[in-house]
Structures are given as C-alpha cells and as structure tokens.
Amino acid sequence: MSLRFWEKIELSVLAAGVVIAGGLWGFIEMAEVARQTSAHGLDTEILLAFREPGRPDDPLGPPWLEEAVRDITGLGSMVVLVMVTAAAIFYLLLVRRGREALMVLIAVGGGQVLSSLLKLGIDRPRPELVSHLVHVQTLSFPSGHAMMSAVTYLTLGVMIAGITPGRITKAYVLFIAVLITLMVGVSRIYLGVHWPSDVLAGWCAGFAWAMLCWLVARRFMRRPTGSTPRSDG
Image 1: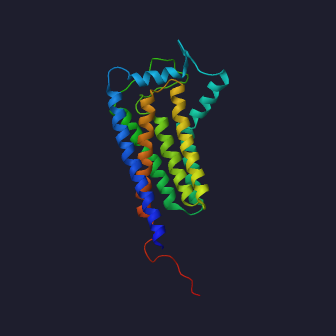
Image 2: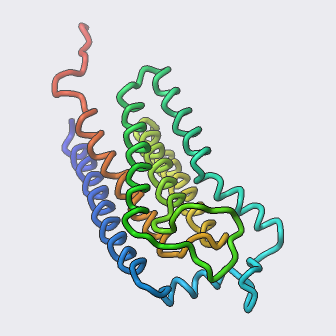
Image 3: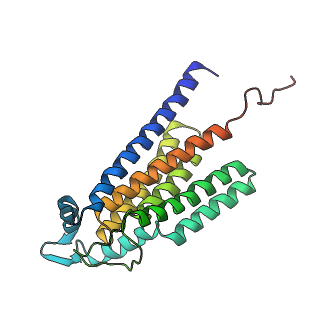
C-alpha cells in the first residue's frame, strides 16, 4: 500500500471522528433546549416561517406542495425504512456479503433502539403552535424520522460509496444520502409535527451513530495483513 493511500484512509477516519464529536455536542445542546419549559424563540420563529403570516393552520405554498412534502416525509417512516433496509440486507446476502449485511442490520436496528430510548429520556410534547398536517403519536424529541433517515441512508450511502469506483461517483452517492436525510427532516418542520431543535437533534444523533458504526465495521471488516491472495504466476 502506498503512503498516499494510508493518508487518505486516516483522513476519512478523522472526518468520521469530527462528525461523531460534532453530533454529540449538537445533540447535547439541543437537549438543553428541549428541557426548557417554554418554547425556544428560534424554534418558534422557524416553525411559524413555514406557515402563512397570521395563519398557523395554513402551510406555505400551493396544495400540491403539502402533498409532496407528505410523500417526502414518508421516506423516513418506519415502513419505508424497514423495506429499504430489508432489501439491502437480502441483496448483500445474495452476493455473499454477510459481514456488510450484518453491519447494516446492527446500524439500523441499533439506531432504532437508541432513538426510542432517547425519546423516553426527554419527555417533550409535540408543538401546539401550529396545526399538525399528519397524524403523530410518539414524543417529540428527538425526531425519529430525522434520526433514522440519517442512520439508514447514510449507512447505506457509505457502504455503496465504499464499493463504487471514482471520486465523483462516491461523492454523488453520499450527496444523495445526505440530501434525502435533510429533506425528510425539513418535512417534519413543514408539517408542524416537530420543533426545529427536535429535527436538528435527530440529525446529530443519526449522523454520529452512523459514523460510529462505520468506524467499528471498518475495524472488524478489514482484511488481515497478508490475507490478499497472490497469483501463482
């Protein structure tokens, strides 16, 4: 292996560490906001910015936009994420990538458990400042849609990028994974079912968890030194 190759690998590990540290810090900060008895001023301003002035029951944009946002938020629903995860795992098993399949299962399954525990840790009700445009039942903090979208799509994005040739292609795959995650999170604010700090906390926790799982998987899935088969010629 060339020195340049190892420097590139170490840079990716450093970047993952920065994401984990930043995610933990961001989540802690948002948790402090969520514990406040009254709504944070910025939370309120952003939530109202998605509604017509003076009409908290009327979201911005034409009726078709509201339907489109509902479709986008569905990309972070439990049903869709389970289907995407199951399809990815079965595909990996079919091509005999059992370790990668196990990585996806642990990352997404563990992320769901973590999301549920975090919701129980901070008993924050849903915002009542604006009307809810979709039905919700669980607690507000953190946003499960935002967190699990980050966990699922980033985990799959990093895995696909790892086996995709070319920097531009790798960057494109990661860009799409991040874009879907951001769109799902913003949709939760537009629909009035989460405070912005809920969504930001979900993103922070989701990105941090996905990167932590990637670091662990990278450690255990790396080939032992000297295990690469050599040609007899």
